[in-house]
View 1 (cartoon, helix red, strand yellow):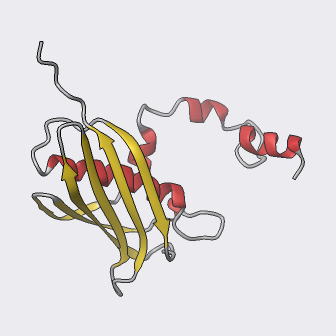
View 2 (cartoon, helix red, strand yellow):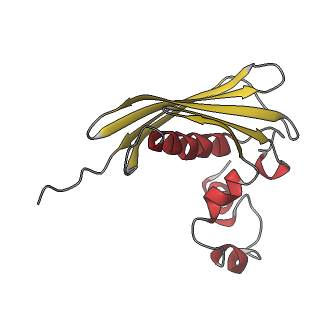
Length: 156
């Protein structure tokens, strides 16, 4: 792919024209998280552990027609942040690192289970693991680890 083609691909969203620009710019704030999380169901919540289910919707598929890696990474971020609250953390700060290993795929209509576990919550950092499994077989499709900086309250 030549440089101009790459530039066009990135700036125009896959080589399409600019007809959707006003629609995209008119989206509500934090639209992306709601777009990814719509349909997410909480199955279990306990201290340090959160289990959710999601039937993979067509809107979250990539060009190969399976769950997009970016959607998976966003779910690691969002569900991984939520599990930190289950251990009593008053705030969840900003991501320091997100790592995702993609091991299998999930197709539209497949139900997946997302399990987040707190590995450690300290004074300044929290570390969680997030695992994605096919609900009917238990086969792991992705594993993530999320490290967050916890905002330290001022003593002043």
